[in-house]
Length: 323
Ligand SMILES: [Ca+2]
Ligand SMILES: [Ca+2]
Image 1 (tube, rainbow, N blue to C red):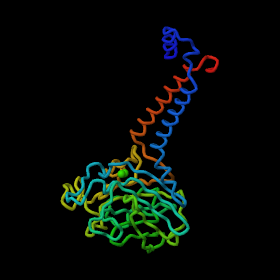
Image 2: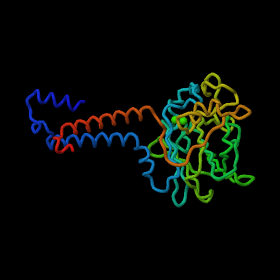
Image 3: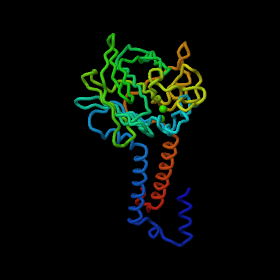
Image 4: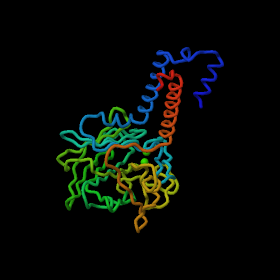
């Protein structure tokens, strides 16, 4: 037992228990260290949620996507031209909220650039968010561009399309034909978040039970449904590492990190349809964080340190105070 060893050591040093008992000053410092460790842990693990929830309005979804998974099913590489800087297609967070007038989608990336001065403030990203808002709905995308389809038990009713050079829109597909509404799109001052504002007149009231398919591709005016193509080998203007000409042409999706819900599993076709097209699973509802080994390791380190400090305090208190 560490306590006994410490006691033996103290007796060997000829110190009485009253001399070795923790002073108030030592106790105060130990509590301060405990507090700082807890704050550091909370800051690292929970800060993204706190930041997401800090905005005005009602939050209906706030989810982080892991860093560095802008590789589709695992093999996709960026086009070779130097405008395709690392991180442009690495989705990092999707934050959905509303106020009295709009439903906002704040979509964050590792990097945003605008080499040809598109009026929206970004050039490269093409974002489709399909929303499962009620029972029924569609399992196919609006057009074949992304090369994926959606879960049969979570068909979609709305689609948000976000792209540069105009054309961003909210599609309400509950009627036939569907109704499309133009959407205002801009880049927030953090220069990493694209915001799309959907007028509340274009949608039923959002609620926390909605589920979302978030697809990130490369924008290409000439691509199928404006998706930049993923080919077997990268060229100046095409992604590389694709397995089929039919796609998928999706570089990142909002996903959790495990099992069949993992992005690699979804986009590699492990949940594929009878026609071999990868079936994507929806995300939501609520607020969550992805599992990362960094979070787990940091949590274990903090717990070990707190446990050690607790044991040290227990050993240092005189028997009458230690209970
Ligand atoms: Ca990502
Ligand atoms: Ca992802």
